[in-house]
Length: 263
Image 1 (tube, rainbow, N blue to C red):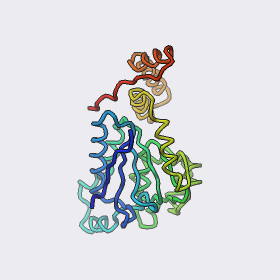
Image 2: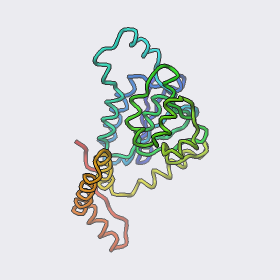
Image 3: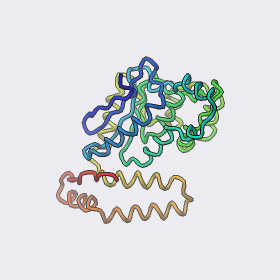
Image 4: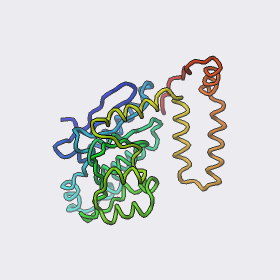
């Protein structure tokens, strides 16, 4: 059985973790599959967004393969293990110009929090529960922290990490971990609403905006001002800006150029 399903739905490429009998827990084999699926989506200029979700209605991703982790631990730490395949996936996601949207269809725990945090936007079913539960197992959620520290207030994140207790969608929404919460029966409608808002905009502008956002995250304020000003100025020279201005004058919808193939 394929552990990752890929499906085209409209202008979005859906990636579904397909291990429902294991609560969609991740294993190391899954991460390069997600990387390859992202590359395939990028090769299709008609794809406007990527959706990441879990199979079934109960779990987005309820953890990792602890039995495999224990086997690695008992063999001792090898140098290659210090480059985790999830880290390589993060690097791929950082270079991805497409919006990546998490469809949190159910519980999101441990490595599931990493997958959620790496996405640009997130919609969650109201019954979903979240947890950084690693401390209950003598582990450290180190891979998730790089993203979560940029998303969640410091004391809230420390509480999640040190107490390792589950929390609900209300707290996730309040902390900025997800954008929207919807009843399970309305989750896909809310997701479609969000995808529709992403559609119809300049693919080039979205790509440039996301790249600028990623670049400016760790800059000092003055450097960020300069970088932002440069990105804004360069966008004035693009064909999409000129097309938008013509379309506004002619009272029509802009005819955007296809998204360029990514190198």
